Length: 402
Ligand code: PHB
Image (tube, rainbow, N blue to C red; front, side, top):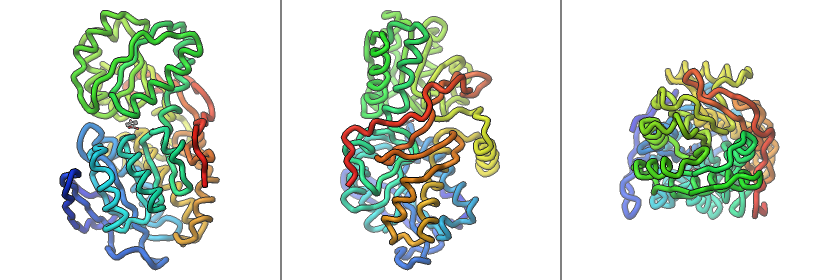
């Protein structure tokens, strides 16, 4: 694992034992001492997948977060920021141990993580028990801003429900009647397919079959054969990262992209489009971002991200960037005094961020309220076609903020 960013890397390793296997903690900070004094650096624990099918997603979130901090001269709300990071490998079974180490031994003040819904829910539990401030920069698990919502838990990404619900109506309005769904068999897949199906069937559509493979497997051939036999009007899918690259390529290699249009949650083609090449052409998805959003914040973000990393920014980088912006708003409201917790949390809850994705605010469960865009892969980019649904607010079912 490598460390990057504006701070000179200082390496400290701690091996984990038990079911978690071995995890590596890397501190990238000018100081290792616990952040007790108000002028000591605030320690941000990055718990993300740096390996496995979601590795690129984790790295882009990390890069986006650090880009914002760099733009603020290494400080948020006037407070120096130090980092410690852990590779969660998208393994829910290791998540509780990893999170406990971050808030225990590593004494992280704030944890930023993660990508995978199952890992995130284990983090949410520890954050609730220890009252650690947690900023979720991707994982969409509905429960995190539903029954498990808490004042100290914020999300700068989306709920799984939010990202795909609008597509149900879009596809029904396009005259599509019969759909086969396909995804990984875990929380994110089930919730994204569920929200799509909720709206699609409400608008007269029919789900012909729900196909799944275990996460993170990528043996799609048998299911692709099944889709060819079922001949639906369209396919709706959720895959992301390395798995999405493989699925889109396999779908095209079987020739299905010519006969059965492929739709999905935007993660299918975000951060993956370059590797998918021609196979991604014409895929339509919904997401809270599009590459060609022509607002000044997005143009400036894409330019700065490219200058820092040499890469094109995507939704993951934006979610990391906005995570740092949200923390900045909280810390600025209290002049960097992390102990003024209630005031800081109130400021974060009331934040209105001029995000590269467009206007971003938060509901009472601390989940984003944001536009969901209909996009199509054109010219090797996820280009916006329309706003599928404006200011989408997750219903926050079961959330009781205490
Ligand atoms: C999730 O597990 O919540 C998840 C993972 C990857 C994505 C989106 C959601 O791209």
